[in-house]
Picture: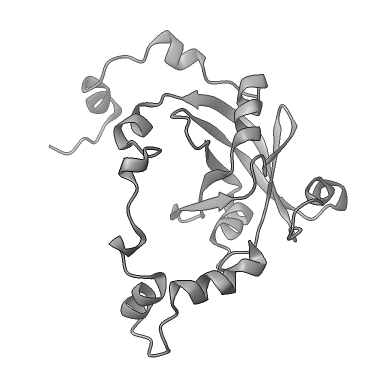
Length: 201
């Protein structure tokens, strides 16, 4: 049976506990700020006016995302593939969802809010110490923020060394893209890819 109503959906699950409901904040408190300051990686979800969704990874040195104040996050836009999917979606709808990860910690931080793209020199100055100073940043106005329970990470054993796959478990990215696109250009090796990426890391 396809679940088509909220009533059908809720009938399958317990009522959320008071703790699960009350933990959602409308601002960044000291604990969430600390978590973000330790995070080198996040995913950002966004969508366009046609409700086509996208989720993109963002990474940097520990604490690369800045907490400007309790309502505002600054995310530097580092060099990528230049598709600009996330940035285009932000222009269209402004809505974003963030997941922050800290290696070794099973909890994650969720932040939802409205984003804008900024090139203000005063805001970009927060990233003057980056190797590749960003052309622009994503400014997120926080609407909801909370610590997410660790069950998903515990089930996945993501941080366990025993769970890590070897590089050769998959073809190289160059081999995959050539197979998917049917392009006939020479296949880029992993070493060539890393050398090409190095100036932008």
